[in-house]
Amino acid sequence: MTIGAAALDDAEPSWGFLVWRLRALLPILLLAGFGGGLLAPNLLYMGLNFFAREHTRLPAAEIHCELTPAEDYCRSAIAENTAWWAFLGSVASLVKFLAAPALGCISDAYGRRRLLLCLAALGLLPGVACVLHVYGCVSLYWVFALSLLSDLPTDSVFLAACTDLLADYPKGRASAFGLVAGSLEFSTLVGLAVGSQMELRHAVAAAILADCCSLLAMILLLPETLQVVRRPASLHRPALLPGTGMTILVRDHIFQCLSFCVVASAFVSAGLGQVAAGFFQASMAWTREMGIQMAMVTQVSAIVWLGAGMHCIMSCFGELGVLGVSFIAIACWAICIPLCASPGQVLILVACFAGPSALSFPAISALKSQLADEHEQGELQGALHAAIMAASVAGTACFGGLFSRLLAQEGIHAASLVFAAGGVAMVGPLAVVCSCLPGLLRHRRSLCEPLLGKP
Image (cartoon, rainbow, N blue to C red; front, side, top):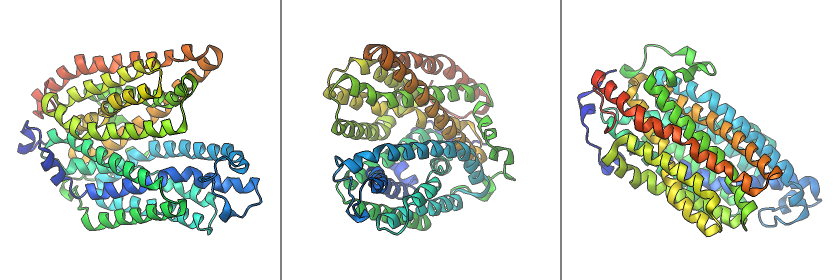
């Protein structure tokens, strides 16, 4: 692996330096996140209005379940609407798992800019279909069919581009990844707040306008971050096949340890996150408004920690310190959930631990990016996203099934043991961070001299 002279600087780059280096990416991400936030609270109601047509004689233009959710025809459409969106969510997970390594590999061979432009253009089609649907031009089934195009994973390519822009400052990658994730969370939160106050038609139209602006910003601002001289001689074709692109995650002992950490944390976080709402509904007076408040507090906590919190921890303890804080936060969150007796206590718990729980992926992505060659960054980030997606789906199924079974057969107290099991499960990745990784990283540094974090 070629290490430039600037890469040997152990200093953590300043916040202003990171913003300046990522100035071409941040406007694109902010616009895309804002558009996604505008659309998010309205998609379910768009489907509800569509399926409610089968349960009423009202004209389609007069069905507004977002305003009258208690109407019989709206309530009758809930099951079919939920089933369709659940099916699309499963398909989206499969698409991301299969496509993420392949797209990352393609971006390594042909560059980031042209692939991101293609993905952004394809991602506009579902939005156009949404606009046409709400104005009565096309069926919602067109939206369902085209939604797969918006599910193509672009996050891994964006992170690979971020790595390119910080090729000579590997110590800044973890903070940079946190800045990217925090910016996306912030713009999504703003879009969510604005979209929830807009009429459905207007919110959908505004969302497609924001996506068009994001594509225009990409055309005007985004440079090619991976120059031809830094690309592989040819496309790594085996990585295009399903599953084979994941081998980069386990090619040596350090990669195996880091992959175990990210998979274990995603498995526990996604699984417990899925059953938390059900636990709150069964154990306290948990209303829809409380769920919305918890989602907003989660995003605010993530924004603060991905931004300022991560940069401070990186400056003092390096990537391994970030991982330790994140895994401890996940364990504390899981163990403390059954102790909450009121919605207010839940919100305090989420405010304290949701943000630091989100720090593990940026830190692991940064560590692995320093261990991989320049022409492997896209393949690496794609494989990481695919592994996280697979672990999240498995965790949701495992914890969700176990919680449902215990709740139905033994009651809420037995079901709460699921959270304790999740907290105990985090001992494994925490032990790897504390015992195995420091020595392995010191050994790697003695061989090839990249400074990967403070031991």
